[in-house]
Image 1 (cartoon, rainbow, N blue to C red):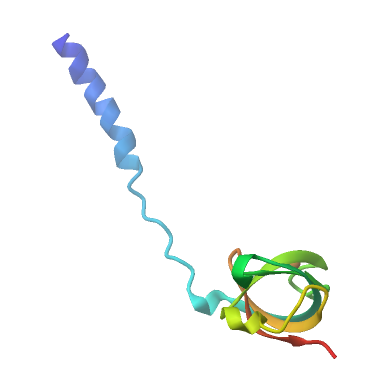
Image 2: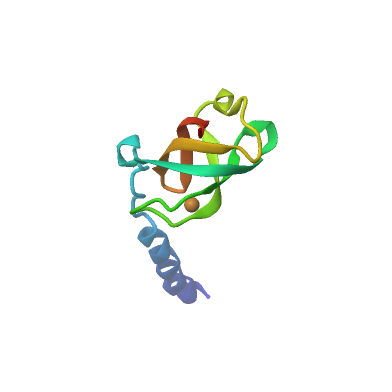
Length: 106
Ligand SMILES: [Cu+2]
């Protein structure tokens, strides 16, 4: 009994030691890229926390699609309605897309 415990214990400790690797640092704002594009507002999230916008092809980033964008400040979406055509600039930071400027397209 005593002997088997001595054998098992070191094996149980080894995996714990291996998990001590450090996490990569969180991505900083300097890595965020900014793009400008046009699109059509499809829907808004609750309290206009985000807007679902069908955007045009964005050269070097992504092809045309409908996706969610978060306004940098909620009031940026005031006066905009579903169906509006818009021109906007957004910051792509990892999986987040933050609208930094938006206006109705002429
Ligand atoms: Cu997209």
